[in-house]
Amino acid sequence: MSAEQLFERPEGSYRLHRYPHLPKLPLRAWDAADELLLQHLDELQQQGQTLPPPLILNDAFGALAVALHQQHPSSCGDSYLAQKALALNLAGNGIDPGKVRLLAPFDPPPKAIKLLLIKLPKTLSLLEDQLCRVRPYLAPDCRIIGAAMAKHIQRSSVELFEQLIGPSRCSLAKKKARLLFAELDPAKPDIDSPYPSRYQLEGSQYQVFNQAGVFSREKLDIGTRLFLQQIPSGIGGGRIIDLGCGNGLVGLIAAEQNPDARLLFTDESFRALASAKQTFEAAFGDRRSAEFIADNCLEQQPDNSAALVLNNPPFHQQQSVGDHIARQMFRDARRVLQPGGELRVIGNRHLGYHQQLRRLFGNCELIANNPKFVVLSAIKR
Image (tube, rainbow, N blue to C red; front, side, top):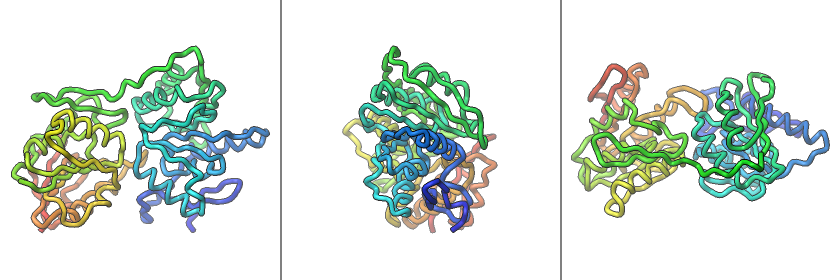
């Protein structure tokens, strides 16, 4: 067993993997912020304090829930991949899955929470939404601890805790990680989350809905603007997949361009899928139906089942940057496409997607471009 896969704890070692598990990528399923947070909880227990069942937010690959399984935690996050990783890491370490209560982003949390553990998310909007949603469920004596790598704890994050929760402070950095401690101020009123937000798509009557943390939440980004101008028509009754759908705008325009097509929106973010569903239903009401599925790329989709896959690949997973997600999306799209089916992709020029598509499909055509982005097409022969 590689040391990179062993999460050392006082009670023993846990085998932890990311999901999907990619042995050639030496990426751990935990970081120094997880270690620092657990070390702090260990110290509390050594002082004779008993840990109540915690609510854990944004546990990237289940390291916190696995380490704290004896405390019967509840774990809530936005990522389908995180949920899969947690389930597999529990099973892989022989831990009863009933020890951890798994919550979707919009599920009500447990009542009277006495220990709240938050891995700080990348976006302030997501942190704001989570704090607004969880505050009414906090017990007056709740212990609230945030954790992140030091470079990801901004002054604005601390100010948001102070605004919505109460007095807050940060620890000193250790191994480039820091903790954030907040005290619940009972005088502060509960505040409803301002999300989802929405905007009107330029040149149309469509309302675009965006849950907190979803890409391009406030306006149409320039890459998507180019992509929307290059959505194919003529698919007939075929199946169109908006892969990595975000707020669903690409699939929405594909549905408009192909009135008889069947639509699937898929993303690993539950909030993205909720945004896409709201956007689609606001546009079509009950006149059009579509599927909305949380998935690891197209893992759950059958071979040869789609006529067109539309894709704006992300180049990060959690805080790690790379092209492994795009490569999996392209492989899955080729498998799922029917012979003659098309994968159409938008991407930054410098990412070199054309080379990957040529190797995989044997062909790649430049459909459109601007100084920053390219729209590429690959056909399954």
